[in-house]
Structure formats: structure tokens, C-alpha cells
Image 1 (cartoon, rainbow, N blue to C red):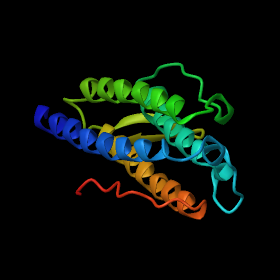
Image 2: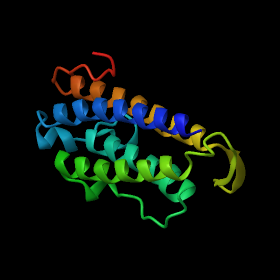
Image 3: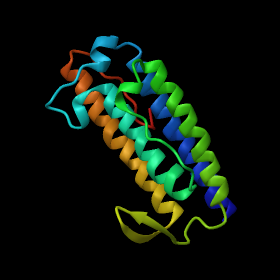
Length: 160
């Protein structure tokens, strides 16, 4: 099972690389546009809100449920700049590594988690897959929103 954990670590490194390209691109976006809320896009429709939502999903599934840590979810208004979002993701990176280390020998064994009042058996592998695919879904929204704001998105695919 250690090989599976190594595989997840490598996969997460690829995800972090894609995220870094996204966050570097976000540095080219004016702070006004970074915070601009557009009702045509979900979750408050701002780049900042979508980034915080991604963070909150990691906080919910990985930190709170799987690692069983008491954590307050990040409020959208707590993040005012791209740099503050980057700081949040560095924290998430540390917690994901802790998660992989904790579950490296039991990645496919079900753990019982409370999901909106219902106990569900989910494996750490399923949790990891959920949060990372969720991140890519919203990354696409961020790139679409930036195009809507007049920017030319960069390629953030894992394979360049």
C-alpha cells in the first residue's frame, strides 16, 4: 500500500503544479477583478470566492472529516488578495500530506464519515479523488470567469 500513497503524493504534486500555474496567472488579474462578483457564475461568482470554495472543500473533507481536526472554514471576505489565497493553499498542501501519510496503509479501506447527518463509508482514496477533481472543476470556472472579464487564460493542464 505504500506504493499507492507514493502514487497519490506524485499525483498531488501534479495538481499543485497546475494550481501554481493558475495562481501565477491570477497575479496578472487586477485585484478589483479578482474580487468582482458576477451573478452569472456560481458561489458568489468571483475568482476569490471560487478559490476559497476549493480551500473549504479540502478543509471539509480532508481536514475536518478524515483528519478529524476542528477547523473553522474560511470566509470569502477573509481573503482579499491572490497572495492570501496562495497562503491558504500552502496550508492545504501540508494537511493533504498529513492525510496521505495517515492513510498510506489503508487508502482503500472504508472509514465512516458524517455527510450532512448521514454516516457514509468512504475510503481515503475516494476522498482524495473527490477533492482533487472538485478543484479542477472550479479551476475551469475561474479560467472561464477570467475570460469573461477580458483576460486570456493560460493553459493549466497537467500535461503541457
